[in-house]
Image 1 (tube, helix red, strand yellow):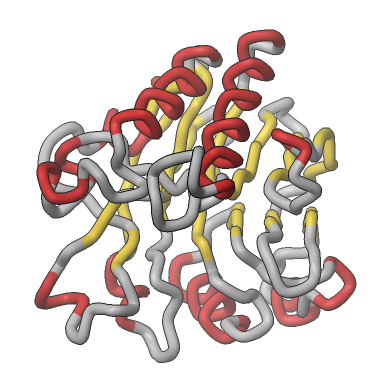
Image 2 (tube, one colour; image 1 turned 60 degrees about the vertical axis):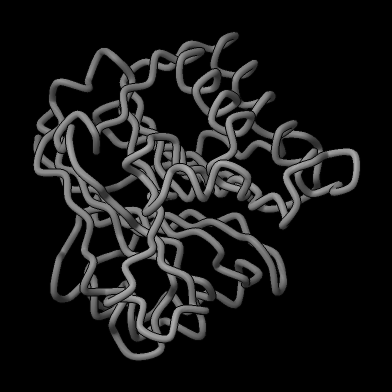
Length: 262
């Protein structure tokens, strides 16, 4: 069985429904995981997705903020939704395919602007969320599993446009990278994107603040596809659809893809 999975922080599924439909029509991933849906589950516009064959939908939503959803052409059933750090926020949902593969869709807190938990509560919440992810996957070691989502951290030096200038900027600080690395190592997760594209700068997010995001190219790789060690070798064809950042009324994130032969 071969299937392609994509992950995309859509920054409002209702506002950007046309972009989701465009991606599904033009790229046709078998599974699309969305973050920052900003919608209660009953307000997610599912009819257009179902008309394109994406009839299996799992979602964890809330009004105006956060929210995650999985759109699938393949049957899947919900197996988990965790509230790490007890934030009371819709940031995780997991579904299982008929072949037993579990797909985790995560939206890790952004962490605010100041990388100091003593003066910025949101930064502390981000670190606590990652610590609980670490503990969860250490206690329940993932098998035949894929973890995707906006993890809001660019871990490698070549995952950001300037390592030196961003060392004190939230999303690339050493403490965040260490927490993400701990969460990854606790589950023996493999970074599929970097397994396929081991070298070179690679970004999935460009700020709205840039007058010309494409020319400036000051990006960060905040969106990730991981696989449990037992199936990582089945992954291939990873890529980021940079062009989607330039679509009309875009998200500030671009979709990240990987294909699995399982």
